[in-house]
Length: 404
Image (tube, rainbow, N blue to C red; front, side, top):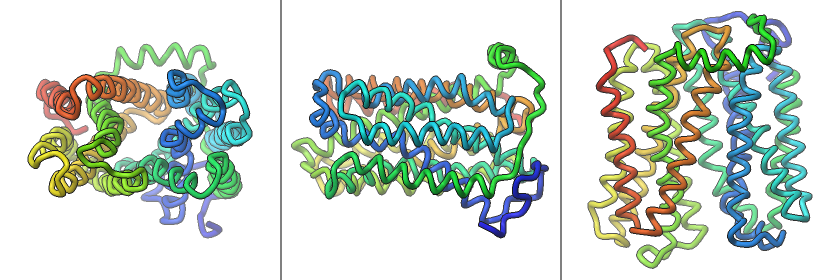
């Protein structure tokens, strides 16, 4: 990393980021975002160890999501107010302390409070992404965002199998202690390597938050892109909430280790991020967005080709996971590229609003997916999964052809 130029000097748009800086920012996003998902496959172990009742065990995931949502709305906009490098380090440091607290937790309350702050600290990734966009010229912004987002998506997809693997050999607490050690090393590298990025908004914090409502009202591309991604991320969350239930059920009968391998396959969809960024830079967002929406719908459809429980059905489900992740990641990057060109002075606020909107869609998809699966199995859940990207596709037909 010593070869990265402009250390601790103000950023100015360059042609492109060096490979070292691109890798660092992508890795940072993946390692930080992974903390949102480490606990999900460990809910049973954690709740039994701490004495959480089965009905309250879901709070482990819920409070992490609540913290992340609060951070998107209340902390990410600070990227338009404070120097970005220092802000990234402070928020990552907060997340690291929360991860350590989770590892040391001995009561349900201690762990749940830590989970809330893990969510808040994880929003550092959504300051890093616009930070990266600041550092390059507009014609390369999509490729840069795509490269960085590929790291984030890999982190999201690998977090669950990684924590499952560690917990199979070590106490669950070690998942959080190992993550904290990695985050400390990451912060040392970021502190030495990242250049300064000073925003020029000139607003106070209250005015900054008030301006977000005006941005929603006056920025139609933000509303449109956020709703597109809310539908697709809702389908994504529904899929990854219900497929473990399907695979562990009597039809497939897979073990937790085999389900973890299935989740690894989905990480292949992360290759879509840099591809999507380059498509956006070439002005192909219009058609690429519709292809992404269609691929998510097709992903659910192909799971019904073969009889449930057969080898072919498992193969198609694995391919569906890759195709779905590919489509969701593509649309995510296209949306960020579209809003990042609107103006550097409110880029962090736009990103916070964009992410918060589709994150709410993901929470809805996860909740309704679990309910539908319990009521009608995979047929009911997947039918709604198909409906979500089709709704986005139908809405996209009202959009005029623009260079976004």
